[in-house]
Structures are given as C-alpha cells and as structure tokens.
Length: 275
Image 1: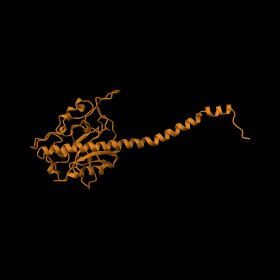
Image 2: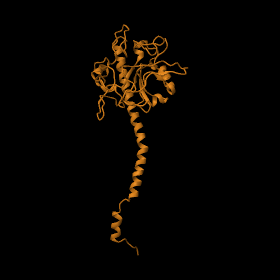
Image 3: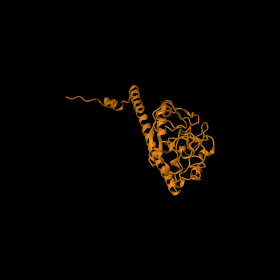
Image 4: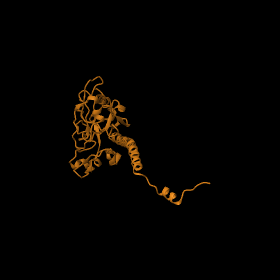
C-alpha cells in the first residue's frame, strides 16, 4: 500500500524558501551574466550610434553639394579665406567648455548649409557629451557640434598648401571618392570650424597628427567624402584609437603619430593630392 505524506509534510514542502547560499549563487550567476552582456550591449549601442552618425554625415554632405550646385560650383569654406570667390565659412564660432558660443544654435541656423539640412542634430554625434558651462554637480548645456571640415577647403596651411591642392570649387577636386570633407573631431581637440592634417607620404617613417580625430564608435570615426558617400573608419594605432575623452580640452595636438602613423597616412591619402 502506498504511503502518503502527512499534511504537515505537504505544508513544509510548499513553504520552504531559498537558503542564503542558494540566493548568493543566483546573485553570482546574474552578476557573471551581466558582466558578459554589458560590454556587448555597450558595443552594440556604439555601433548603432555610429550608423546614425554616418547617416548624419551623408545628409550634411548632401547639403554641402546642394550649396555648390546653387552657387555655380563654389563650395563653402572651412575657415575665412580670401580667394576671390567670397565663400562663406560653413559654420562660425569656436568651441570650448566655457564660452556661450559653444552652445549657441543660431551659429548653425545662420550658417550657409542649414537651409539644405534644416536639422540641428545632424551636427552633433549622439556619443559626444561635451557641454558648455560644465561645473561640479551641473550638467551644462550641450555643445552644438562634433563635426569639423577639412582645411583643404580653406588655405590649407598645415598641408602645406604650396605642395598640395586646396579647393574652392567642387569640380576642381581631383579624386572625389578619396577626398573627405567632414570629420568627427575629438571633443577635447575641436575648436574652430576646420580640421588640420599635415600630409604624411606613404614611405615616411615619421609624421605628426595635428588635430585629433574622434574615436567615439568603438575606436572609430565618421567621415563624409566629396563624392557624397560617408563611412565609419576604424583606427589602428592607440594614439588615436585610445585617446582619452576628458571633456576639458586638455588633449595634446600637433604630436608625433607614433603607432598611429598608419592612421595618419590613411588620412593623408584621403585628404588631397600633390600639385
């Protein structure tokens, strides 16, 4: 004859909870899983933001090209330049962490490209948390842009311009698919509207990085090119790929490329050509 547990045994089985050791084991498993998943989630988020930035760069590039078509092939300038074409600078104002101009959106809306893009967010990477007026315990006002424009479209002082081509008209660009126009600049490097590159020849053993590119997207950076395409370029050397973001403007500029020499050569190859 089968025996059955007594009512008191049923009650004990139903009400029995987790022991402290069991709870600790569960918590440990959750912590391990979280430790495994969070980095992957962070990379996925950075990749999604990179795709958004690439789309923003494409839209900004479209505005750049539409301006050129409307103004007899003349392109906007990256800095004030006297070249006879009366070109406006693509955006006025310098960025830092204290001046109100850093967060003044009218600098965007008054710019020559805004009527073609008409969206403020296109100018700022979602990964960029740089803000004007940041104080201890205060968030500050987000800065207006993360984007700079190649010095090839001004007087090209750092190239130097006596050896390399600069451009005032879109039709003058020698290799449009390998001439970048806009770049995401490192938030501690960005200041005026232009990004400087000192050209590094393919066979060079040394070279300098003048302005520092961004590395927001898992060690990568957004570029848009004069043929209209945009891409996210992944850096190789640690100087650029791992450049710390402190949001205080303290990063060193015009520095030896060191292990980022290959990156400097890639930028040079995609900046301009010799005269």
